[in-house]
Length: 266
Image (cartoon, rainbow, N blue to C red; front, side, top):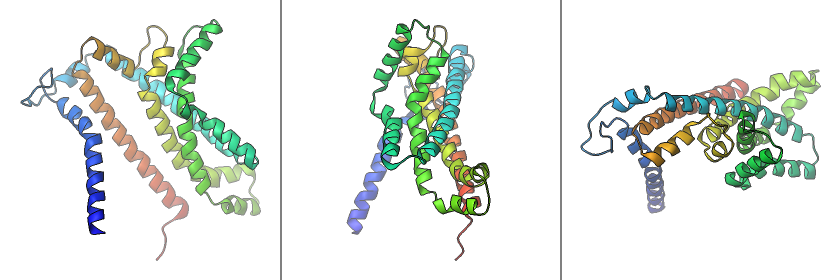
């Protein structure tokens, strides 16, 4: 048993090292003054200074954040409505609706992007941000739905029944019972949809209007025409922001659960 436990721990450690070593190397090299990531390591903030003077890269990052934030909000609203609405359906119809909501997970993003582009051309429309947001919502929505579904299934139906038996109407029950229970999942689902949208290159490449760019597109262009360590710097900043957001989500979920159910008394 002990030997099996040691092997399992070693495997987990190896998997974590394999997954996160490239990210650590990228972050470390963002502070290396060498343009070609050569050793010996010479600590410097040079590439961060160059990054903040690169208006194209900064504007692309702002565009990505804006699109991802709007996508995240839309996905949370739609996922909440879909999950709550599906609770009123019968078993077979409910399963069909849930399967339909998760179907974009099984379709390659390349096919989705190409399909939307062909639809735009067939309708004689011009590419614009509306279609970009629509495409990002299609691929990001299932992730919010999955998180909210899991949260909804863990919710005790007796809570809503007790609220109704005490004379609360539907809106009061939703505001005081259902919404606080779903709030952590809404935050987590919104953040997950935000990251899926922020990182997406395929749909942005197909649907982005002329003169408008996102960070993944700029990174791809930079690599194609000559890599610059400024990409390391902006990637490090994004990783730092992501870790901060994850910590905030964890605190929100933890505090929400404690405030709703309280601490167990021994």
